[in-house]
Structures are given as C-alpha cells and as structure tokens.
Image 1 (cartoon, rainbow, N blue to C red):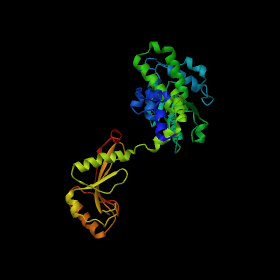
Image 2 (cartoon, rainbow, N blue to C red):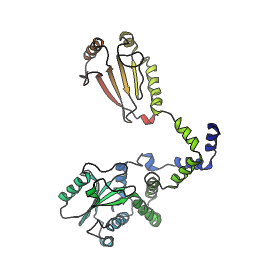
Image 3 (cartoon, rainbow, N blue to C red):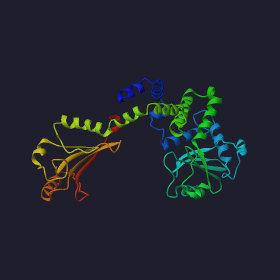
Image 4 (spheres, rainbow, N blue to C red):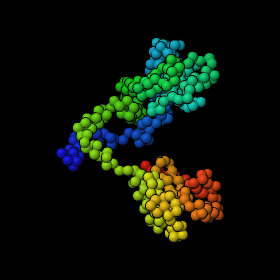
Length: 352
C-alpha cells in the first residue's frame, strides 16, 4: 500500500470523521487556550469553591472538597464527618494571596491549595508557603493541599508528610455529581461552563475522555498515514518567513541572510554602499543587516540593526555611522553589535 492509499483510507474512516467532528465542537476553555494553564484552572476552582460565587450552587462543591480533604490522615484537626457541622456561608476564597494559588479561610481553619498541572514545586516553595500561613494565621487550624492531575506527590520530601495529595479526577467526580443532581436548577450558562470544564479535565489533564480513546484507536489503525503526515507537516517558522519576505519585497528592500525565526534586509542604497565579503552572514558574508526576530515569542517582533563579526576597519566605519544617528544605544557585546532595538506587538500564531 502506498502513501496515497494510506491517506485515502484515513480520510474514509468513520472514526476519523467522528474525531474531526468532536474536535470542532466549541469549548469555552479551549477557545481561551486555558486547557493546561494553571492560572486559569486556579481561577475557575476559586470560583466554584466560593459559596457566594455566581455559579448558584452555594457550598456544594466546597463541602464535597472539604470532605475529601478531611478524610485524609494528614488533615489531623478534623474528619470528613465534621464538615456537615460547618457553617460555610462566610468562607473567604483568596487567589494568589502571598503567591499561594488558592486559600480557603474559615473562622476556625484555613486550607492552602498549591495547584500544579505541568510544573512541579521547587526551591522550598511549599515550605515558604507554610511559614507564610503560620505567621499570618497563628490561631487557625491548617490543612495543606497539593493538587495535580493524578494526585502526584511533591518534590519536597518534608512537605509530602504534611500535604494532602488531591487529584483533578476528584474535582471531576464532584462536578459530575453536582450536574447529575442539580443541573435542572442551575443557570444554563453555568451548566455549559461546567460541562466544558469537565470535558477539558477529562480530555487534557486526565486523558480519560472518550475522544482520547477514539484518537488511540484511529492512530493504531492508520499509524503509517499519521507518521507520513507528521513527517510532512508545515514548518511554522518557514510559513511566517514568507509573510515577512513578502513585506520586505513589497517595500522594495533587499533580502539578506536567512535563519530560522529571523528575516533580514537592507535598503537598496545601503545594499550598494556596504561591501560584502567581510562579515559572517550568509554566502555573501554580509557585515551589516536590519534584522526582524519573529518566531521565538508569540507576543511581539524585535527589530535590530546588527553588525556581524568581521573586518575591524569596516565594522568601525559602520559603528561610527550608526552612532551618529539619534537615539542609538551603546552595544553590549564586542562581536555582534546592536545599536538600535525596538519591539512591536505581534501574535505569530494568528498568521502561522
């Protein structure tokens, strides 16, 4: 079977069509690119934990969360059976207080949640947070929670003895139960938010969504076709270069040496004046070029004037010329000399 036959078989597979269809369904969190962003997850968790939140289900999620936490032997001050006796109406939820992800403050106790999705704790981070809480709330009973997709233990060995390890699977179970029982009484928008969030948890964090299973099935059935596609996927940097190349040519400027993530050029007058063969850029060994760095950040582009290592006499003349221009900077380096640098907002992913 040749590559064309393999691709044809993939496109004709009904499971592949289902996969395409489901992936195209709008999801609020996917649209916001929040599926693996700790800050966005912490914001959403802070919202559903807040008994006064606009979600409309009061302390249902908070109470379920506290039962789970207090059932752990590391939460020595309370048991899960104490939770129903708590008045949670005045609980305060704080976000990013003293750099701590989520803080639950009750009149008697305080719960500290460190949320980790892809990163891990580092540099005595958890110990510092414990000390901060001890100093700020000396009279409260304290419970520390380490939240990860699968209940992973912390790097800090000492903290592992003190922190309750909680998983997003437990978060998912609690939200599913709330929807199962209370969906009819909740605002439609809240229901959609919760459903979208559950989809993201299962699909992106827990890898337990039916779409994950379908993707594995389709890949196994068409492995050669997918491998061929991946080998020939477009290079985002190359596609972006075409955009800048067009802008440079349309401006009647002269393209310079190419490197991934950079577009370089000269004006026609400078191209005729600056001698080639004395620098280090490209086959023409160019000594000076205007440079646009566009690929390594999805926030901005950086424009520079760059003198390359090369003939000292020519580089000295180029430096003197640039230093005669208003607002030039003193170059930091000794070999690659940058006299002008400026940033502009630029979202590369919108063009790639």
